[in-house]
Image (cartoon, rainbow, N blue to C red; front, side):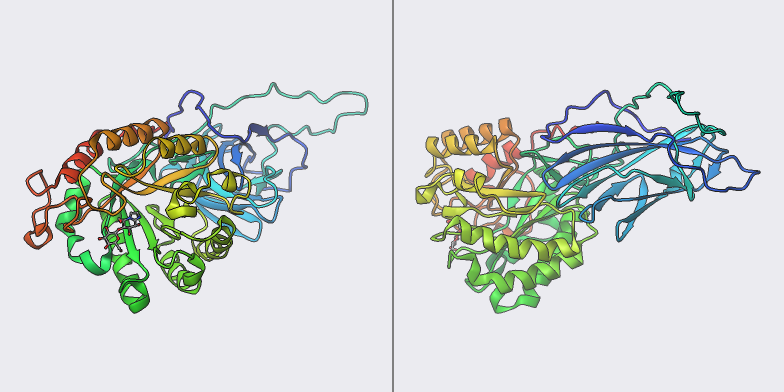
Length: 485
Ligand code: IDC
């Protein structure tokens, strides 16, 4: 049978607990076919954080060999949900969960084990299930005594076996999405399917309404293979001749880019690019309509991350939080396990550009699981005090730099190499993911390509790049170090 590589004990950066529960022989065995010996033991290991968890399950077949199996269990709490799973086909109905074998782990010899798992979410509590079945037979964890122990005789318990932690199978491809799979927030970090922190490095489009011609097969091939980027941020402006003028057209354009990004193994960050007006509430109904559509359409993809508002400004944190708590459930209804990123006060400066700081978020976080908070900077305008606040915030909140420039906040001017280097060194050290503004040929210093590039059709190499483009390509194409165990 196929065995799953088992790493040594993993480093879990989570605030939650890691516990192993071996089910004790408490339940009576149901009547079964006397000819076929049945029995199973299940070990459930989780790490859990506010609102989310990863469950690793080891199944041991204590009966005769089986060819094809279904594991069943019930969640004790109504708010527990299975999200992205691995090594089995997962289904949940009410609180009842079933996991059916996949091709390579269907045959389980007598005494054989297999490991499966999933990322899940919870609302009020996250207790472990107390009973499992394998092909309908209760997994009582070992031999059930034929005569119940008599009073006064302590039952003999087998020595506890501590199974090694389990992981999903090794990646079958080399792209960022093939390696990392469905992402989730773990503590203050972004983690991959091995539950290990990663950093994604990539580029942001310019406004699709102006620079749509820059995003095609050739330019995205260059981003994936020449730049070796991990993600594309898809910036869909809402105003300025954007989404509000043609909701269906822009929704389709975003979906097409999600597909092209997926085809190249990159993550897609869907940016609802609000900017002016700065109050996200102004676009609340549009946001609900847009995110209902894109989350339904892309729910089964593992490469999609949602950014629900670009740069709130001139509004309080509580207004932003209120907006987030109305938009997030719309996405969750379709795509329960995707990471969602929430803009912050003062043009997503964690409040700094409007005289605040990240305390307002720490003290009053968005009431949702698996979310991150946005931080933006422009290297020629924002320096040490912004870096200090980002570093302070990063120890307390999951932060994603969904946009930054190497130039001034106007999007134009010269590259500030020293400040840009200081920023990117900091982001690398803190494993904070980023997207650079912009992968376009706009006639402004922040654009990576020289004006006219998108009309020409060549995107790879350095001859088409601006100073900012060369700087960013050099940073982004250094090898990723994604952990796979
Ligand atoms: C800028 C573009 C510029 C465009 C302007 C108005 O670079 O071509 O005319 O928007 O839409 C942001 C925003 C981003 C800005 C960028 C640079 O998220 O939309 O793009 N910036 O000014 N925040 C800080 C800087």
